[in-house]
Length: 351
Picture (cartoon, rainbow, N blue to C red):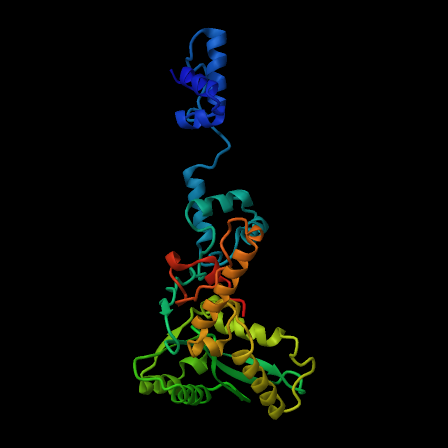
């Protein structure tokens, strides 16, 4: 019946492999059935010995496998791989099994990756997702290095960004990284932008300036909720990382180190003014961060849509029934979004 059903499906333009898959057999089984019918008139299993009945006299016995495990987990060898254990045993005139058998036995017992003091990696929960629908709801900040004339010494650029508007809301340059500098910067930025208690979420990495006692006390006093990335996971703080990349790779970034902190501050001030007021950001429909922070971007984007609609009416053949470019406003911005809100556009954080 299975052969007849498969033949009927193939006659109706189905592929043999797909028909066999639906029937729950392989193409090899189908060929064996056909050959058995052709030669013997039935489909009896004429294999002399099945795989389950085969014996392998060279296989290790259960006692031998246990001896291998006992050797691998002994205090002397529990932190060594089989590639080290086998030669040491051979030098002592002892052979338990081949090196590949050692690895196979360890894998079968779940010890192929870690034994002894090798601990399993920590499963750190992903940071809580935050959705900003207006300015001054979610800020993110980080510290990057600026080179000096002294090799191996750097200035530290502290920079805070609003993820909804991409506006740089505060920055400072210091000689070192401390929670005191960070707390002073955040306090100034909150005062400048009129942040009320329980209004703002501040996201950062896990560095000591971010989690220092002074910083955490300042955030508690200001009523700002702290949020932190997972250890060694830069993707949890993508907006600051993208901003620093824009700084370091912009055409006007100095080709030589900064001669003094005054020079560094002057250059960063010029960059921040350009970034906030002139740079059209791809993540917010190519309006400037200042326009979006002031929420004047809706009027500008509506005007762009009207320009495109007018052009489409005048020359419809250029669009060929396609819609105009999407100039709709980005109404919300996610920080570490859940999977159901992770889209291609949100994952591209190019500044």
